[in-house]
Length: 337
Ligand SMILES: NC(=O)c1ccc[n+]([C@@H]2O[C@H](COP(=O)([O-])OP(=O)(O)OC[C@H]3O[C@@H](n4cnc5c(N)ncnc54)[C@H](OP(=O)(O)O)[C@@H]3O)[C@@H](O)[C@H]2O)c1
Image 1 (cartoon, protein in one colour):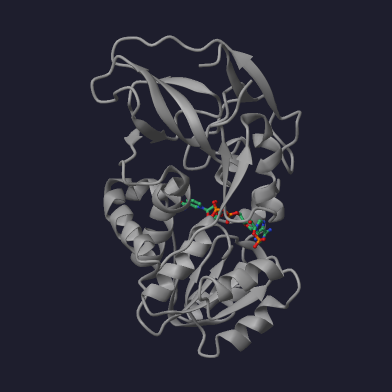
Image 2 (tube, protein in one colour):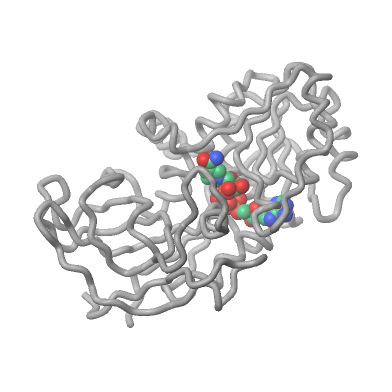
């Protein structure tokens, strides 16, 4: 065990992309473990677009993260010492309460024990919050039927790539929207998407017309903004729009919403937001099914590993310029300091 606890703290609310003056790297003492508590050493930390919302100062589905807090994050850790009967030493645990740091003490609230059959490297890409989001967002909110045309934005990202593959399993025709030729190629060649649109080089509205001649039955939205507008203009009657996120807006002080909501009326369409938090009681259902598909080779995933806690906050902005190749994860396992 290292002698000190390295951690990232929010010191100032960012304007635009996060920079080194907003979140600072420092050290603190390793906290003591009391009765009914255990000490966790973080092994893997998830970098997620939603962290940008937590530090923005805006009220979201959580109250704003206070300035001065250790950065909130999803992570996987190992129990190093324990005075809690349900969390033995050596157990792999996951939570959104461990923070972006080496060590933390937990009382077990909001902590899941990772089943031994789950490979740790696949946890964030397939089984944890990402898998649960994709699985219930598409199946519960999107209600796919065989033959439906499903369009996914942020399609080569962690959530989007799973959504498209689940859509294929359910018999949908899947069109993915992504920001590079390499990502579009991966979606078509490796994941079996039927068509792709590179939103940085192509006219999205026009290409949606070409690739979805009967209109869009399900638009799974990860990005909001102009792409959402283009999708709204190409809906079929009775379309469903699971609203998962709006990453195109997260770094903006003023958000711009869709301008053609009347299309929901014209097409008798339903747009519904959802949060993974509401589906946590049904997590096992998603994990079992996703694990089965993974074993059968029906779903694939990409994880981009960032080595070392010190690199975490520079890597964070890769989510916003599209440089990340799949689920972005910080690996602390070989992190000597
Ligand atoms: N509702 C929920 O409970 C829930 C849970 C988890 C995640 N989410 C949401 O799901 C979305 C995807 O999250 P993720 O973790 O899977 O991230 P991700 O897709 O792995 O990474 C983010 C991707 O978004 C794309 N992007 C960034 N800026 C963009 C812009 N201005 N316009 C279009 N695309 C842009 C980039 O890909 P390109 O190269 O294609 O641009 C980037 O790789 C986010 O909106 C997130 O907030 C929601």
